[in-house]
Image (cartoon, rainbow, N blue to C red; front, side, top):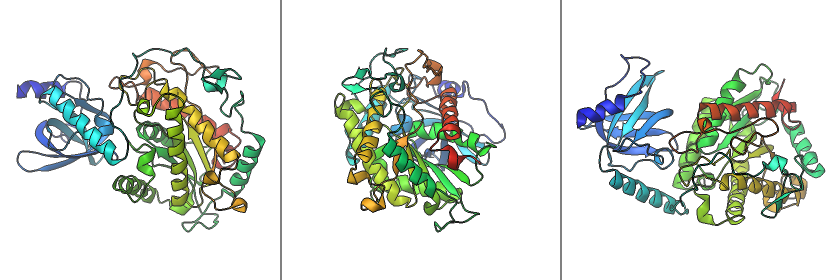
Length: 433
């Protein structure tokens, strides 16, 4: 049986260096950190193996099926596993992990751990099953809905069919842009300073933004002063960012601080953020608009916390999810992925209406948030092309859950980000040379 398990684990695994890899081993999970994408496993001889989890890492149960919750919810400590790791570019990477015990028991343990983690964070853990996967919903993207209505809400990113910010919000953005300039580590203007552009969000966000960062770092049109840093992390939904003093908050912001330090960017130099967030299991918060208001309120708190962490943050570009119609879990299925866009609109409208919780203007009181605008809108109705040609096929989402993007899906988002920062009038002035 052990030989068979090892053979299955080896199938499809290509090794970059035979001399660098480690053979398949048995062990027990010591810790599984979904935020840092690391797993620590203790082997029978007492050796502790810590390996990085990468997008290509395979997680399999006793029936050789994907463990779809592994990346976001982890695998319980004490679980017996078979695993394989290899050295890549100087670090140990987890190639594959298999739970050879009883599948139903493992799923039960994983569900219990998920519920315990959710309770600790104040969120329910009982995700409702998603609808059957489908190639389209039959609804128009928000950018093309115009003055038609979806469940009582008009189309357009900013409402009433408009995809452009209202004049007052454009004026606010112009004031914010005028303040974006290279800053030294103390936040003072300096010709040799930096403009920090960061991401805030969960697993999809970091997968997509990390590809954007690679493109941006080689972008000849990008200003040399703009330093792109991916702070988004797997499993880090809004509530995990919103209390930096909680255990989960310390982990989340600790990772963010490590990444900023590695990029040699101080908190005072961060001036722009791309915020792409969603709830985990939106269905548990009720049908629209209830779940969308939950996300709205959580994100308002996130914007306040982000502004506290980055005092010179001037602009935050909000983005909702990609198409979720292929989802096979209750994490982020449709229609919730589509409906989350209204949360972004309501936040911007609240700031426009003068909500003190989102005040950006020191002349009007305590500054609580940056100026907020729509970033690139990513949703398209599956295989039905948007006017710009964007589609989402099954190949753009992983087989394991139909929710996280494959390399092709990640590249689509990265390309939309590149285009946005090159052409949008509220991004181009500070992003490009």
